[in-house]
Length: 304
Image (cartoon, rainbow, N blue to C red; front, side):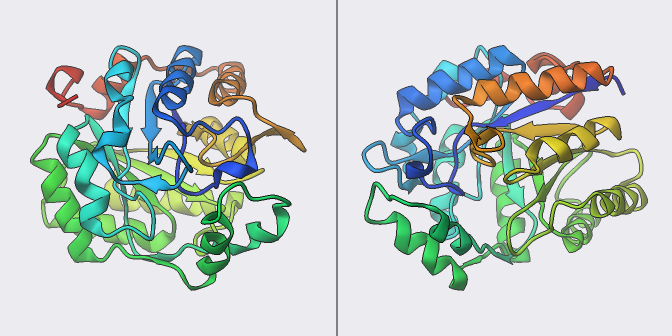
């Protein structure tokens, strides 16, 4: 497959804003960086929202005021993961209200251990940041089979397709279970997530095992993409592109463009991975090509 989907995760709950002055926080900043990433080659924008005053992860639909500005530029993919400290109803408040073409769906509960980051940060801007990170040694992201079925039903009735976030091998088995129940239909868009402590380490052998397992479970009914949090972002994405898969970059997953050098924008990371995949003979898909590949409902049917 020569066409490749580039997803950009513009901002999210994994990183705290004091780590980089370039991480967008306000709706205007998120919109500006998201549009620039789309113009650089991202067909899909994976999005979270933040409180504009202190950068705290937010589930308030009012904090998603940037959405209408993105419609002409890319496919909007809203999180249903939000933050591990949110309830399921909070996580679904905005995507239920805005009915995007796509939304993410984590395929299981897991430890979400961010606490090693706390010792590497020299200065915190807000009083919530350090306790949040250090407390993640006792933090579980809850997404039980009942929760997953609820998200599939609530967002499926709104016509959304899913970016199935696969943090471990068993998450593929869980997804297969739901396909057997008929709650989701192909094509399945699998996002293999590496580098979060509590999930898979960014190792090539693990990626090849995931690919073989997905082939066995889903046959020709799926496509896969790869994201790696931290410094393995570009190497693992490059491996995915070479294997015929797709890629995700963005400041949610990695704040750097090279060793010791902060990325100045999401678009800078998109530009880098675009140059790499094009040298591998792949052609970045346009938003409309992404819609065709994933069977999306179309931008005219969203509620923003």
